[in-house]
Length: 215
Image 1: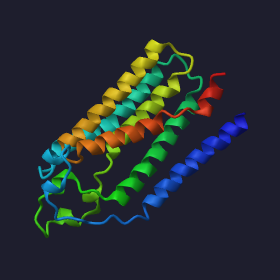
Image 2 (image 1 turned 60 degrees about the horizontal axis):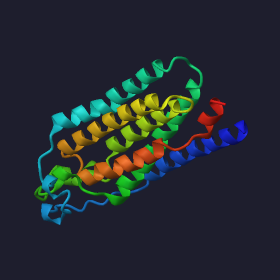
Image 3 (image 1 turned 120 degrees about the horizontal axis):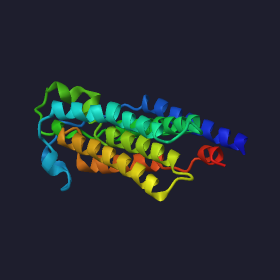
Image 4 (image 1 turned 120 degrees about the vertical axis):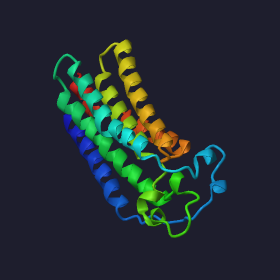
């Protein structure tokens, strides 16, 4: 069973790497100038607002700072190092697969970010690939994927209360990150919701490696 587990984990790592590589081949289309009226009802009120760089930096802090620190802190409170390498591998798999999937979708869909709507022709932002990476939110997807992968890696054999706390912490931090991306006008609400669903699905998958480490 260890051989089967190793083969599965290697396959997942290769899938994640393949997705990441495929994303580099996609060429996002630049569809703007575009008007806020073309946006769906849920997202329309956010279209055309200016970029809020300060809030965007705070969301970056959550993605690259708060979430990793929280994951390490939870690991330190686990009461031992048994299974820690396997947990780390599971989180790394979630990160790689989610990053590849997110980038493929972003570059294929090429949805303009909220602050791009209403910009006049000739504006520099209209020529940048990064301006057409709204769907779906990578910050939201990544924080949910890593957070849920970390939470699940501690779940086997632990009490429901401790498991609930870990998922609650992961959900709270990831949801805050997504809300900050909307506030920064980097993403629409639908981008964050889709990213959350994708990330949670990737991060919460059942790992044969974790199961074998707890038997």
